[in-house]
Length: 402
Ligand SMILES: *[C@@H]1O[C@H](CO)[C@@H](O)[C@H](O)[C@H]1NC(C)=O
Ligand SMILES: *[C@@H]1O[C@H](CO)[C@@H](O)[C@H](O)[C@H]1NC(C)=O
Image (tube, rainbow, N blue to C red; front, side, top):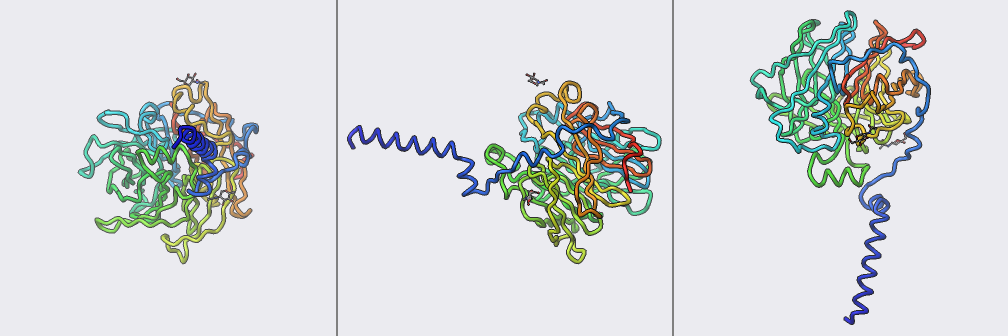
């Protein structure tokens, strides 16, 4: 080949590569299931005045609480909390991979009594099921009735560095101990985010990514979002066996999850939507899609409002600048603010979202979950990266909880 021909081949090849690079999103959309999400749609609650946040108190002992669930009968909030500095090193949902040879990560659970306004750290009794120095890195949490009224079960996502699991604890109300009764592992529990209990030994989980770690995970984060990346799994424990089944269609970033009677709600934190499913003939492993609700913002955890059974969805009304928050955890709520909002999806209005609370980020910053106790008219909101990890807000009379 004459050198001038060789040169033109190289020029042409380079031009093709540059074109591919510049059009990578379009190419991946046509070939690999990448999707574009309209970012304007995710700003419905941006730049609004604060709502119902005038009587909040931030707890300064618990930190980095990702999830909260209120046990209505005892007016007690149960919280999955942790360590902001540790989460910067190792919190798989945020894309951070273990770069550390820290011997162990040990995060905490708390309870907060809404009647006496007392916070108590819960002691973990791992029994002989896990070694004492096993990693505990918390994320989603749910509670379920125990064998009688004196007990509950606590289901919690755990991100140990050797893999995700759902931990099932027994808790006797009034005590400060969580007794581990089962560590549930399965290949389908790989990038776990939320958990919603269905029975003492079965639950739904969301995975928020497809690849837990490694180069494929980096490519997933770098070039996504992907329509096929995540979904809801139903898992049940039968003796030593754990059986999991994908029960939803796939979505870009499944996140919050809640069950109420035979309805299942799954939020998507990239798509800004909540999908409502119904268990067919009451069977938890057979879900039928009822409808997709556009909530107009990144949707995080979902809780059920006791009494009405309406879903409460915590959202990021101004978006979530995760890299900024991760590199400034000690400034969160001080000089770096992540506004937050709680939406109620009213069943009797076809799940149309209604703004229940909004905070500019001074008290409830980077909030990932909020639950309400209607009896004491109190909201407990959890901030997943912040020092001062939850806030307790008395709701004004203007908020209708009926
Ligand atoms: C994303 O949200 C839009 C608007 O609510 C909805 O129409 C669409 O079905 C959602 N996509 C998925 C995969 O949930
Ligand atoms: C966030 O942290 C980075 C790196 O430490 C620093 O340069 C930046 O000023 C911080 N931003 C804010 C708003 O505090």
